[in-house]
Length: 151
Image 1: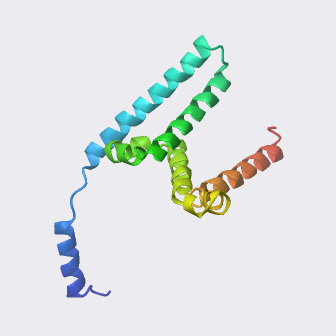
Image 2 (image 1 turned 120 degrees about the vertical axis):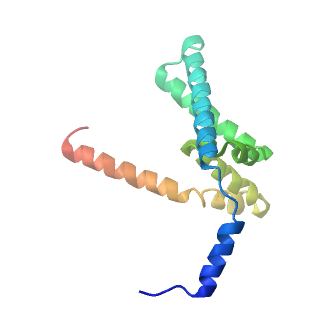
Image 3 (image 1 turned 60 degrees about the vertical axis):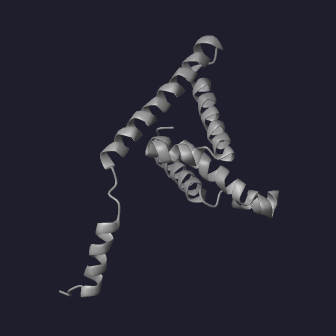
């Protein structure tokens, strides 16, 4: 059993004293409330599409998600997404908005290198793992359902 050197313990104590404490409960409440409000707004949009524009349920769900992605990309491009994310925290980081933000951020960051080699090649650099994981997962789910005769 090795003991930590005194310097490490001294540094850890200083670090613990100087690091601001995170308001975990407050952050959880904000994330829950804002994430819930975001879902309520999207459900209202979906209900409006079904009720007033004669979309069926699947089409309305797709359109509402596309609107959410477009709003996220627009807010990212205007520089408001990060400010809003600082306020509401994880409530804004549902997977689809987080993915849209990471792609839009990369597009903005690399635009000076050109549309193809800059923005095009680097847009999925941050989100590439998500895309690969999604494709591989879908493949295995389809393979398992095919082998089990579900399809």
